[in-house]
Image 1 (cartoon, rainbow, N blue to C red):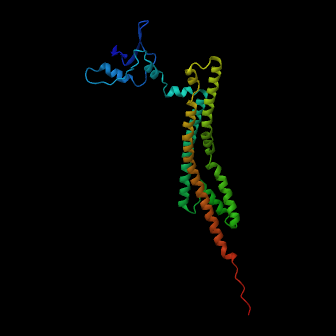
Image 2 (image 1 turned 90 degrees about the horizontal axis):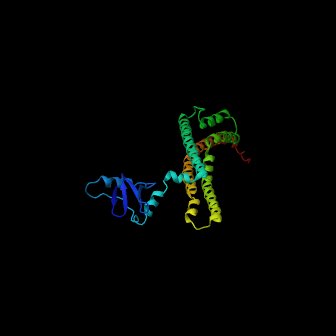
Image 3 (image 1 turned 30 degrees about the horizontal axis):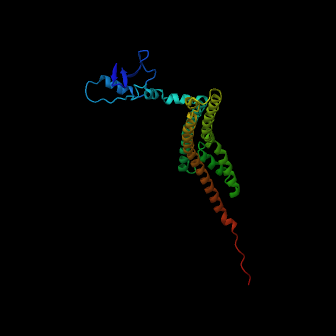
Length: 271
């Protein structure tokens, strides 16, 4: 056992507590995180200067050291969220999996669209652009107005598969903060019920019941999910933009081809 002045007692890198009434010397029930390394280095040092954390209130009762020891870690803070915190975490995991899955799929679709652009007239039905261009080739004899409707219909058929699961990501980003607020409000209701029964004399009772962990979890899930939705939606918007651009080009070429037929010669004036 190593005594640091009149402040603290150390043993094997652990902080000890001494009860003068009972004469019992024992390790703290819970050690403060990150301080045992310095305590262990001090005990093994033979010379020089070794930094170590001490509690100046040790002779009075070691309140600061106990407060550091009672400070919850990240896992304990997550558990304080309770059922609502678990639901928010589950939604965050679902959003992450959905975003990565859709990003992987849409990148493959976008590669197929770019490949189709390079191939030109060779239509490949394994990508949306190839299917849209094949519709234009099938109804090549239609007038520009009817061709535009057929191409718009083909794009509408491709849109659901391109935008799949994007709305779900947006919904998760919206409801995660609301669930966090729900957990906080639920904790406040419990606190008010306890105040009604036991009174408001114990501040720890109020601070322990009103947990803001769920609100923090909701924001931690909502912000990355919103960014992931923007990222994946960029792929979907890019694919749809190419489809609409190519469709507009086909309709414009067809309208230009019919333009000379629509212009009739003016009759010459009779003298």
